Length: 430
Image 1 (cartoon, rainbow, N blue to C red):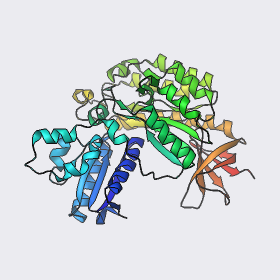
Image 2: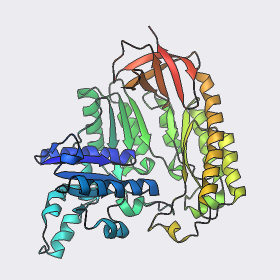
Image 3: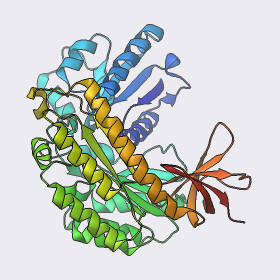
Image 4: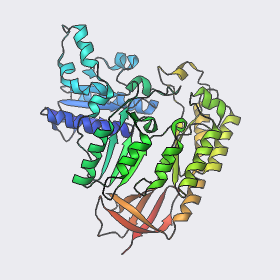
């Protein structure tokens, strides 16, 4: 059978898609060039924002219309939503939690005669089982390595705990084995550790800082990066580990979400703005020059203009180098679903633009420090105009001018000649 995977959303979905591909090929399937000719089409969906959800609906409709013979498998954040099942039930062959991947074909072939207890057995899989599948990596030099699945935090706006279940983590032995193979046997240059909350990792006596220490001791020339960190779990020990080695990327992504304590409480974030600011101060003291990026939501239910201005204030004070700014979107099943979404779309957009303006000003100011400096860049792609691009340890995109003798997936020294708000322009050092 031919298969095609469509991935919407986060790094975790990207990593999941690589395991889905590996599982299908181990079971005799072959990837097709397009979904129009595939026998099985798998959608790894995202339910964080309405736009991502709407994209999934549109794709399902297109697939049914243009490839009616295909079996559509819907996984990811939307797979267990009752309203999604009601809307797409006649078009989708299987709604599958990613945890159920090892039983995909049994679930797909079950009949109405299947015993209920048998079906429950098929679906009783924890998130660590599918993570043991060896992935089919899309990149030959950067690997997304999931260290766990699920979330216990229940932020009031977020669907992840309902979509992926409670936190389950892989053993340190399995993670180290996978990373060693990537670095030593396959010469990968960047390892990206991912989970819904990496810094709550725990396997036996090994927590996240201890896991990182074991990984940076692996021999080789590589970088370790990780997503995503929750402020309530970012320990002093983790900060020390980040500062201890150049193998740790000079970059920390940590979600602020709001600059107002009352909104943070309503979001169930379990930290204060003061605590967050202190964390940023600690990490910058421990590793001067580290790039800090963040996430923020504007227009959360009840957010007043005065409360939003506190978010503007913290952005000016902390000077993030990038931020993913989201307009609040109601998500079925979350605690915030029952709250009055009383901020208009026009006001949400206005707040997003105001925050983006502050972000760009601060990011451009930070990027001035890179002018005329030589930076180590991992060359990763070529754009449509023929220019190579790479990424620094600090997660900066760098456009390479007049680069001819460069190799994708290799490090190069680059002198920075110009800057933009969120990227750099440079020349290869001869």
